[in-house]
Amino acid sequence: MPRAERLLRLLEILRRRRGVVTSSELASAMEVSVRTIYRDIEALRVQGVVIDGEAGTGYRVQAGYVLPPLMFTEDELEALLLGARWVSERTDPSLGKSARSAMERIQMVLPSDLKSTFQHTALFVAPTAPRDGISLDLSSLREAIRERRRLKLLYRDANGTESQRVVWPTALAFFDSTRILAAWCELRNGFRHFRLDRLQSWSEAGGRFPGSRAALLSRWKESLGIPES
Image (cartoon, rainbow, N blue to C red; front, side):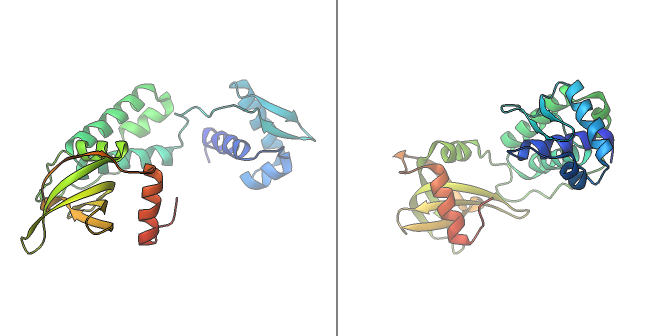
C-alpha cells in the first residue's frame, strides 16, 4: 500500500473512533508494525493534523478536525471518475453536464501525484443507443423532489390509455433501457412507478406534500424492502 494511502486510512480510523486508540490497535487494524504507526502519526502531525496523545497512552484526532475533501486514494478517485462518466452517459443532459463540471473542478485542485490517475484512468462507460425519452431534461423533476412539490402528470400506460395523476415525487431510478419516477400517487393512495418515456407531460399541481422528503423516501424504500444506507 502506498504511504499516502496508508496515512489516509490511518487518519480515517482515528476519526471514526471516539476515544483513544492505542498504537497496538492501530497496528493491528493497519496490518503494520507499531514502529510504523509511530512514524505515520508523526508524518500526519507534520502535515498539520492535530493528534492528541503519545506512545504508550494512545492517540485520537482533536475534536472538530475535518478530513480534507480531496485526500482520495487511487481506487476512490477511479470510482468517482467512473461514476461521473456513468452519469454523463446515462442520465439527463443537465445532470451529465454537472458531473463533468464537478470532475473538472476536482482535477484543478488535485495533488500532483493524483492528477496522472485522473487523466489516464482506464475505466470507461460504454455509450448506449438512444431510446425514447433519452434526451429529456429532468432538472425540473429533480428540483420538484428536492423541494417537495406536488406534480400533475399526464401518463400513458402500456395499453395507450391516458390518465392524470397528482403525485408526490419521491425518487428517480436510471436503468439502461428506461428511467422511472417513483412517487406517492394521491389517486391510488400508494407508491407508484412511472416510466418517463410514457410521461406525456408534467406540471406543478400547487403546494407541497406533507412531511419531510427524507421520511417519504424512507417509506418508499420500506415499501420495496430497500435497506436504509
